[in-house]
Length: 351
Image 1 (cartoon, one colour):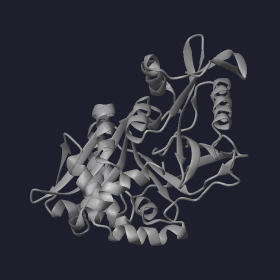
Image 2 (cartoon, helix red, strand yellow):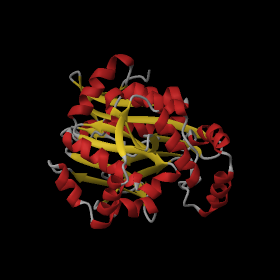
Image 3 (cartoon, helix red, strand yellow):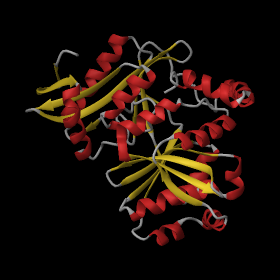
């Protein structure tokens, strides 16, 4: 446990979340407008148990009440460097606060922690910027859009081309359902990322997400003639639906199963009273970026800000880096079982 310290204002005490703090941490997440699903306390257990990375979930409190939080995890890799990040494997993170003095308190503590750990850099992944003087990683945008109350109105709001693909899926005899576990999802997801040349997460990761977040971690699978052709794992948070990991097999493209799949997530969310559809992040200039924009979503820049410590610059470990093109091509040639066995050992170092 980190020693509590006074930061920025005498009335604020900074500490690290302990098991007995989880309930009040999550209560704050539910109430704080800045907080996201990725600020939930459960990410600490998932990151520590699945990936083995140390975490510091910082909070600032006053009069016994939490006023600001900042979840952090360290990834120390011989291949990709040593970083302290809020939060690895998550699209959003950074500081969530109801008080700017409390925000400054956890911010200062994080910077001091990064210096003590000797990391290459400290990174915040945020919907809005906080440190204009830090190094910006302007490579991602997110796609968020309010949902209309009537599912049919949401369908009509999809631009004509993609609406036609959704209707093609409907005409193909596709059917969706909610799975009790992540097994069928993993088969579709692993096949899809292998074809993209990307290392896959472990089966255990998805099981632990569902175990930790329960009904707020939902798997929807699409079937054709009794066989699963695509599947997506989504998060629920405060009236928002976030389809976060998804994939389809070889038949998905022919049947327009991915378009139908995302429409079914949207339709069901609308019927459940969700108010916002979060299509997640995509890298600028990629096919997934264009795909989401063509669904009628406007890109919103993400503010990924890095404070340099030991490093002179922020390393570029993104697939778009030309240095990784040969590796991506080689990965696609690996037999799928071998890729599934090796992938989790690589992806845990990326974050």
